[in-house]
Amino acid sequence: MIKANKELFNEPDCSINKAKEAKERIKGCSKPVPGKASGGCAFDGAQIVLYPIADCAHIVHGPNLCCSHSYFTRGTRTTYKEPLYNYGFSTDLAETDIIFGAEKKLLNKINYVNDHFKPRAIFVYSTCVSAMIGEDIDRICKEAKDRLNIPVIPVDSPGFIGKKNYGNKLAGEALLKHVIGTGKPHNTTKRDICLIGEYNIAGEIWNIMPLFDELGIRVLSKITGDSTFDELTYGHYAKCSVVICSQALLSLARKLKEQFNIPYIQGSFYSMKEIKKTLLNIADELQDKPLRKDILDLTKRKEVETYKKIVPYAEKLKDKKVFIYSGGVKSWSFVYLLEELGLEVIGTSTRKSTDEDIEHLKAYFEGKQKILMEQGDGIKILELMQKHNADLLLAGGRNRYTSIKGMYPFVDINQERLHAYSGYKGIIRLAKDIYNEFSSPVFKIARGPF
Image 1 (spheres, rainbow, N blue to C red):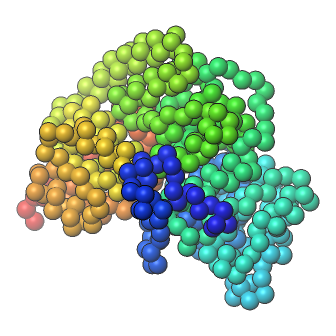
Image 2: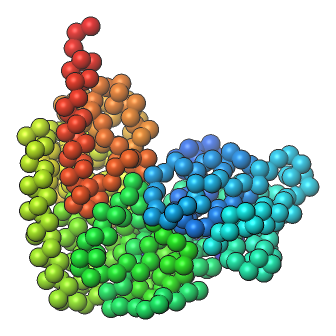
Image 3: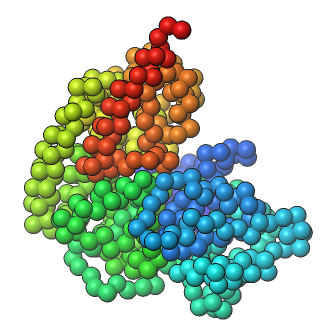
């Protein structure tokens, strides 16, 4: 497995790999350091990509603790009536299984899940323990598939082989090998697209879909937010792929282009500027001039409506200083979004960002005194905010306590968040959430005399 997927460490379309010298490129992506998987291992990354497929069961072949790693820790949502990702299935490997093997135990678990939950398909994940004792999940999955007559898909993703991002890629490989290309849609249109790397955190796809519907763009396949198994099987019929999270599934987009001649673009739906840019890029890739005109009309109207709706919050937000501690697409697209709301961004982190993400920031910040923090702990973040008189911290949930210690207003923009910030509705929602933070009396009390 590790040998078969070695090329994933050297993604040719990845901006980071492109920027390396030939000698460095041979080494591939950074390998995991023992004891430093708290930020997410390969197993965690694979689950993140595949768990949103709502009508599929996900069995973890490992200890129960592995099952709890990503289970219910992300805010993915679905319109599917009874999503099976609400259940945690595990073979619960113990000492005796390590000594005598647990392939029969895995087969029994697959049979049990099929009989009691009737999933459309079953994904089986290897873990560090099952990989180290040599469990052949590929053979077991094939045997179960032949017996049960449903797709049973192995996901070779033991945590020790790489970081979370590598696990994302392994999940994409599993989809490409076992799922995409196995089905056919009832019909196709010239405006069929495939969304890649959007997991519907807090329902963000639902802010985007109305835009596509109004423009006559059909999202044929969503990989994988608010998705079902069948729509993934015919994702190869799309006319264009739109990659939302560039580092995670760029390999999948490239291989869809190579195998099925599907072009792809990278985009973002955070901020009015990026919404317009992404939609126009879709129109250009589809070579659809009437669609381009419709996009310009729609975005102009939506921008006017959005600015009107954020007027009640504007005075409170104007010229407030904010620091963003996030990575990837959010590291730069949220800069545009916040400045559209009237806030001043003093800087952002670049952790988990590609070179392309960083170039976005450098180009936008050119000639301005802005901060690019590669990696920082709570102390560094608070020192920076104090030095630059920041008013607000936008970050992930683990930095909530950093803001509490510094008595700063805080808004969660990572995967645990409760509100969607994509699309035009998301912009209004973010304006409201920041306004509520600034309006809270708790900060005046906390900073006052005791």
